[in-house]
Image (tube, rainbow, N blue to C red; front, top):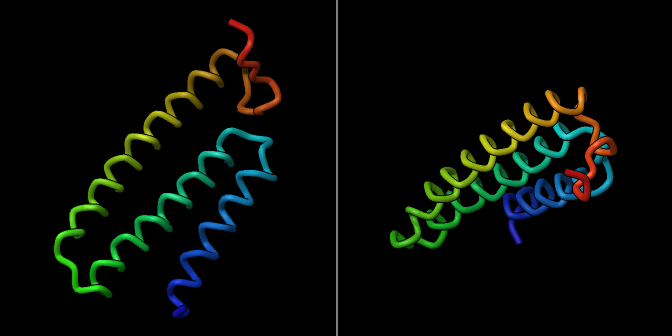
Length: 98
């Protein structure tokens, strides 16, 4: 395993641990999700170059477009929850309540 692969795995693991353990604010959860997407994007953009496979060069672009949609949806949820609940703390959000 090369050092670049280890860095990608470490970045993804660290951001998933941040998502699992530091869930106080919605913005911190969104930042952890974005760092997971960034590490996956970098790994997917380096992978076809290492393997000399030209058929997988479109995959990072699709990943980036899904990541942009996820970021837009997350920010819309952040704005909506801040307007309705007054803060972005995750303990104030109750999904069972309409």
